[in-house]
Image (cartoon, rainbow, N blue to C red):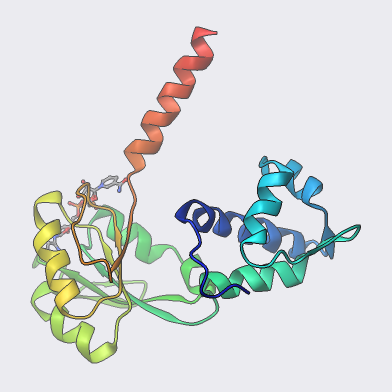
Length: 212
Ligand code: NAI
């Protein structure tokens, strides 16, 4: 694998989707697949698939296609899945609680170990067995428990200051649900989730269909 090669963000963003499809194929006992078949399933061109996977040295064999399990495991390694990552949720409101209640993260090694909020009515309650702590305790908790990732589900007005604190405590990545673009050091990975962006894209597509 080309470890040192810089892989574009566009390719990295497609890898989880390959991983998911390959996992589904593995689950139904499919051993190998051609780029053409994979392209039909995933609605990506076969040449795009070959180009993407060539970034990591290919993994395909002419006339055979791809070995599903091998490719699945390679993508897993590339993404860094399979290890345990400790996460905290900051903001135990609607979105924070929904994320804590989603059990599938754990099957990929993403473990939520702490939840933080400022609201006294929420502090002390448990969500799926995990206690909601006072946000004042967050910094010490991160340091003592070597937390990798913070999920930020707090109001926009709080996002910047909280993200700054998280960075100072040594957080490596922030999954940001608050509608605020965070300016953080390059050493901190940030992934913003804006559901409304998806909805607006859907509206555009819906109108485009209606205009036809
Ligand atoms: P919510 O009001 O139900 O929950 C926010 C929680 O954050 C509250 O429990 C509040 O006490 C807590 N909080 C406030 N300041 C805090 C701080 N400094 N430290 C720790 N906790 C703090 O809000 P909801 O519906 O869960 O939304 C959360 C955020 O996500 C909002 O910023 C909202 O605008 C945004 N949002 C994002 C979406 C997306 O697509 N990413 C979709 C919908 C909402």
